[in-house]
Image (spheres, rainbow, N blue to C red):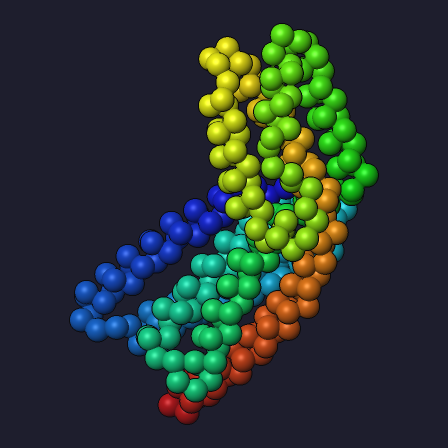
Length: 272
């Protein structure tokens, strides 16, 4: 499952470097790089190439799951990286002018990027293997029962504090919501759950607090699996809905971009 945010960090670093080079060109020329000049053209071309890679290579990899050229999670990270850096370069290519078709392309680009962030958030709500394959509910339930058994086994081995700990664990909020909030608001739910853990530990003496810290990971894993089991169907429905919106917008963006490029080549190059 995609949990980290390495691709976001890489995209941020790349954007900083590109911005630095953009500022250097501005300082050397004394003006904003024009879209029709060499530097502006280069930004636009490279950005568009990255956007093409965003829309093609990940989709091809998804359709060839039998291939062994990289994990799905790594290709998704590449998809997100190019989907952020490419539009950023195209945005700089505009020279801060958003009239006509170029303005429509810019607006569609912003919408696609925002939609991509939403899609990534929903995507991470669907449990997956390291290779990106979805984990079925039966396997999730098996893992949840296993984690629950481990938790009960740990408590049974500490009878002197088991009752106190069980009371505190029972006081934690219910995490089995299957509604829309369970998917879209899961970051807030997880934060509140962690805060509740910390509040419950304050009611224990030092020895019990140390013991509770030992089982915190076990309980959090069990309850995380409970959340995933209960919200899996909703997460899949939201992801399907997101695809029905994101893909047509992406197609509209590339159609407008191709028309814009064709017009730019015709008027700025072939007529000269």
